[in-house]
Image (cartoon, rainbow, N blue to C red; front, side, top):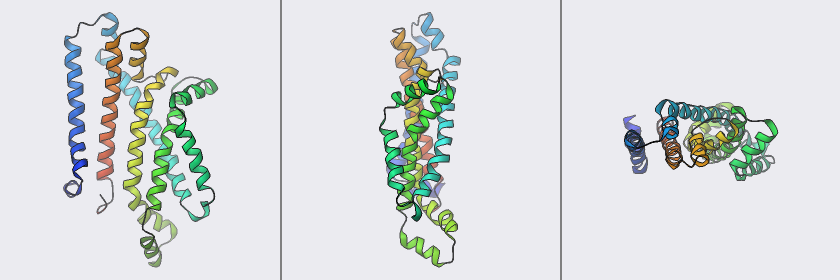
Length: 250
């Protein structure tokens, strides 16, 4: 780990140290405000710690389930699209993925809710569609960015196509793929705030409550907590991106 830390860029080091500090400062300041603010009954019931932690847990669960689905679908599809036999299919698949990313997330959530009903799994489907493209695009870009001479050398050593993929191409593409995963995670944390509109829970409920009941303290608290969760996920993604890459690549 020390070796990877030494080889990390100045930007990565700053973010790896600065992001958790920023989250701690924001949450600490919010906690202090919560303890001294003159809250009415509605605000006090909504912003108590057990309620907030429950909503944060729902939000995080939603993001983690979506992330698992995206990883299990986008990475294998990205690998398939970089194989020689998928030459004609790749542009079509990438075009469809771009269409899904271009659609407004609230529109996708509402449309799927009208078609399939409300609830957690409909929100999972909508957010998975939204987070699919960054992982797919980075998987394709990472694999296509591998030096062809390295691949040919591996084949010349007698490696099978599967061995070349698992031992050469994927390890070299890991930093780019993980960057896409991190981007997708942050996008899904932010978009997850809309899940509350279809009864899927999450921190978006605070934002919705603040808007409906004209309680700006609840509205701002919800937005702040979603931002803190996004920053925490960004930090966790950078840690995995830096330390999970094969030695010599990070």
